[in-house]
Image 1 (cartoon, rainbow, N blue to C red):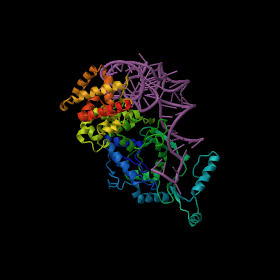
Image 2: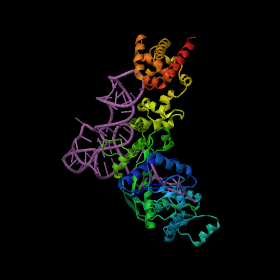
Image 3: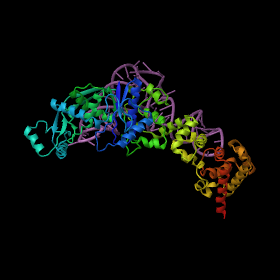
Image 4: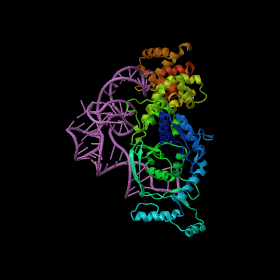
Length: 489
RNA sequence: GCCCCCAUCGUCUAGAGGCCUAGGACGCCACCCUUUCAAGGUGGAGAUCACCGGUUCGAAUCCGGUUGGGGGCACCA
């Protein structure tokens, strides 16, 4: 089995392309087949090396690897059928187009876009299906010469025969189309650039692809491909059309309505293993109630014929949940490593590891870490700037309660030997201080929380104090007391 | 407009004629735990399986139609 993914570098790696790539990858891995990456960059106006780099990098990030094709955006292609970039395979396409021309399966057409548009309009007015009227199919030599003399450059059209095309789709079963409804489509532009429907067929044959797994948006293009395959005398691969990933309104997932660039998810701190797990289940399930799967486990269990037919909405809530599951499953040191890029470089690695237990079960995305525990590395005055004096008051109480709690906390912390500055001792002493002040624990702790973390919600208070240390904790409590005093004066 | 595909809780799904008074998960609600927020635990609401007909002793599962949704019909991919 040889499968391939064929992204077009006309944009960053799209969630849908990633899922299609994943399904291809899993299919290949499951069967012990070969996986090929081919870059479809025949649209030179829109293709860029930057996008190619983004696609390859993010595919690698997900853990998807391939046996043949470019391994890096600016690296060499590896594999027996190199090159794997279509822009480098022009001679082959030219040769195959010539074969089609020679056999009469294709012909040159000199119609201009304006003429084509006029014909289309007329057909629509007559409620006829809009398709090419074959004006150039049987031109005389004189007519062709006239067009050439006119400076017109011809496109090459494939002559679609009126026949019913049937195929057994890997996920949809028997499907049939009536090609007599199709117009003769263009396979080579008038600037000599071959077009998608043509090159995809030529390359799949050249690269000996046995299974073509792609999005459902290509289902109705398949009869064109099969017609081309037959005209060229190629072997017909198996086709499998997987359902589309949808926007919340059930239209095809688009940049307009959803976040579609994989890099955006990566930057927010989604874990690749969570993304892979999530994507895999958008249109497939193992048929059991298990739902946490690693890439290897997926490769083991995935079967293309168990893929669903209906499209699936991209559900952020579910992705968030899965991401949390994967974050919590990480060992502290591992999580610290993953968090590295989301925390200022000035924060020492060992300090970062100490922060992990405080944030681990609160993180939805790695990128949430500054919001959760930024107080640990931000300077005291910055943290003090996060709240107003009034925010120090406990839920039920005012400045007086805040002052009482803060003063009680200051005395308690000041009396502690630095060696005893642990969450456990802190909690014990502070509870005692709350009782001495005649306050409920919650009311007593909340002003302290605000003073220490600058926020009304935070990781556990005493662990936060321990993390910060005695001096910085005291300084922040004094800052809070100062803000309180300023109000009173 | 034409062609094709699809259709189970709001969402992702289990379900291949009797195991289904339709199961799980996310989200939502309540309670428990608790210094806040999470995490965790327990419970709950939520689907006449789009609708109508047919086949069958029996249908979410098979067939037909209807409706709804989606995709495709480029000198884009």
